[in-house]
Length: 593
Ligand code: SF4
Ligand code: SF4
Ligand code: SF4
Image 1 (cartoon, protein in one colour):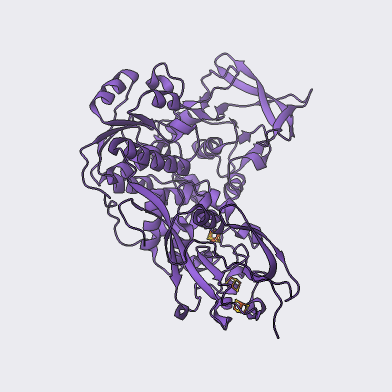
Image 2 (cartoon, helix red, strand yellow):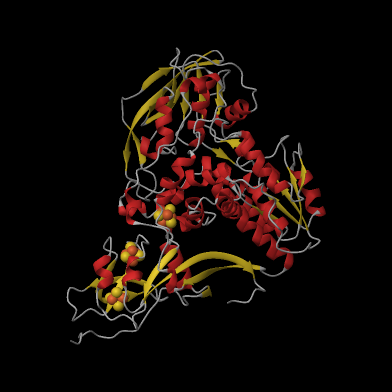
């Protein structure tokens, strides 16, 4: 019997199935197929490190993270997890995303071999760079610039490095020794550090004349001001409060505490307050977060919101502070108006509409205002933004929160890595490194084995073990999330679909026997009559066909594929191939395979 189908052009979603590629089609395929890596600001190779954890190779998993995101132990605890929002498990609706962030922490908690600083890519260039600010962006940029062969000096205002990681995030979420160990990997490489160096506009001018390039990474050190009279003995801005809490310089506080705000700092302040004012075990007095939008718009993730409740902290939403009640130099209450939310025309967070007559006053003994942070531009003189100053002065660069405004650690790291490459290009007059996609074909003898089986999708989500309240109350620095135990690693890591593997059909070899379709665990392979491509040759849509007569292709939908390899093993004509794709950065002098 002859099938009556229209023979169409064979196609692949890569320009080669074995080699190093870099066309728009290759990058599109990569970004679509590995959504978690694409969503990570630092483009961390998520499936590769999860695969290593599944195989028990913690050292390799840690090194993959270290290369990509610089602070695996830190980010495994405090990352804002844009990768998890993009994970394919969200689409397939099987118990929510892979616990990518917790898996990163596993790599940091369980690696065995001491980590040496990463090896420089180039010989010493004789160029010198000053970095002003030793927080996550400054440190990440320092590491990258040192690897480019430049001599690097970090000027840090505080007596220790770490910036917002050390002063802005409480120890019970991020222990100091974790931060210090990862900073140590960077500074041991040979970077010069000058602590207690408060650089001003005047001293910056001197530094600019002495170095080949200067990078500003001083973060967002000023509190965003509230438009109310909050100057009082019993009120602090959120970043000042966290600094005092983390440096053990906080004055004793008690009674009822109001924390105004709904971002990361507000939540950290409230949880730190619960410890400082000894409220964890339900003692007298309250800690309340008051936020102007609803809980879904708060920055805290689901696990953190659970801990807030567990730690006896209340959350009042849809309330905006409108007046302060004072008795001499003390705030005794805050007046709020209730809001209703309206869909924002610009598509951002919903806007708030005050409800007339809904005002109420809440009495309090202490107020923390945590409504955001902003940059201190005094170092720039007359310039009013980092970009403006850097565009006007060719040796001057900026990165991280100082350039972008208050974001998070992973965004600061990613921005710093990118800026380090711009600085190198400026200093050397040429772009020395580029990103490519390495596509590695697995021979048929490999049998399409990724290590995954269908029942991995039925794994229950593991719950993060946490310290009991009594322990948290005894020692405010007790880390709350204790990390997964060894016996939990296999089930946490096996949920990942290992999206860096890709199965494709060579249509010249396919005989339309349908065997692959018969063995699929999901609707991952279909007979289709048409496939539609965009201008780069990437398939964007297809029409399924119900009859052999109009079936042009047998098509694998990577979005549905769970990388079980059954189709490859059953195909009688070896039409199905498996490749592994890896984003790589290499020196431009390296010849393509
Ligand atoms: S299943 Fe794994 S590789 Fe795929 S998006 Fe989720 S974490 Fe990433
Ligand atoms: S490997 Fe093949 S059979 Fe298995 S899920 Fe992917 S396309 Fe379907
Ligand atoms: S099993 Fe192989 S030959 Fe048969 S339809 Fe699938 S890809 Fe084509």
